[in-house]
Amino acid sequence: MLRDRPSSTDPAVLALQALAHVAGDEAMGPRFLALTGMDVAELRAHAGEPATLMALMDYLMANEHDLLATAEALGVKPETLAGAARQLGGTDW
Image 1 (cartoon, rainbow, N blue to C red):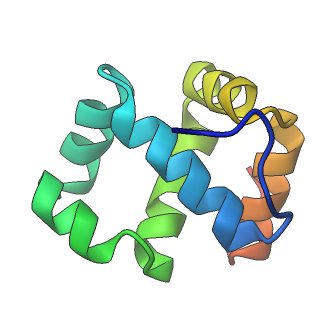
Image 2: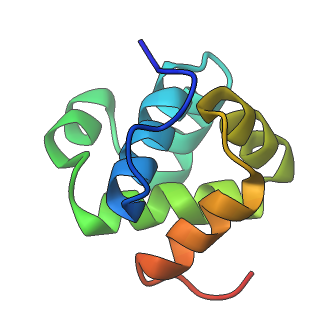
């Protein structure tokens, strides 16, 4: 269960919370898995790894609708997610 607000401003924690939201969404979850080539077991095994978190953040930055939905679900501004992506090593979108 997600909280109304993220419990941390740490970019990795925010990315994990975003990952939990995306993975639990019946539209976004399968789409994210298809784009990454991972299955559910692989996602679970690699969820906390930097490459997985960056793949998730890249996915969100490339899909405005999903970015907005995830930001709303986490109770943060989309810019907060974009900032977390940059802090994790992403590029400027």
